[in-house]
Length: 259
Image (cartoon, rainbow, N blue to C red; front, side, top):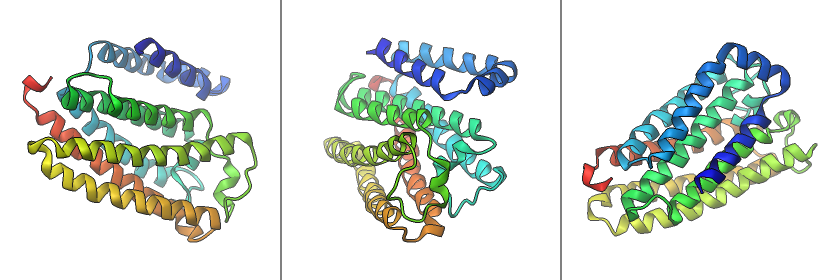
């Protein structure tokens, strides 16, 4: 399974950079990129503990949110309230958002592995598998970025390219996976007395995210709240990031016997 994971991630890595960007990136930041990639492979090979997964998740979620806010402010022509997160990828500093998506994908994957070990005592389970699929979905958003014309399209009913169709389809699929994850994780939390507080948090945060996610997709399809679609999406993403951070903090605080 690990070899298959590395194979998929390598395909995505080769796909997201155009020859020009790859050349510039290799020259200026290649060393940092490959060092990061090496450490990720080592940690996956060493079977990340719940404690490591929790700390990684806390750092990764904060990194993604801060990068998202800062990039939204400095990206030329980007309107944070109107434009969605995916539009950041096609802008001047799109390579930064590509890296942010990579960080988020690895955060979600490692969190799923750590949470599975805390719940079941093993890495791979229904929980880690769903988080793994979600991680691949995030990588798919890099491989198939949003169509730039979607930023000014009021009602999302016509797709200008296969790229845009794949992108929005992946977003919809990830929403369905999140619903399944919410149910599975909620049931597991109910079985663990020391996780009951997070069970309540999971119920409210996930309910909020699912309801507003469906509302956002409906508005996006029909062109409702067009000038605020980006803000609504960012509220939903922030809701999920808060949940991941809180769950990561719990994992990081577990005694070593849970490793």
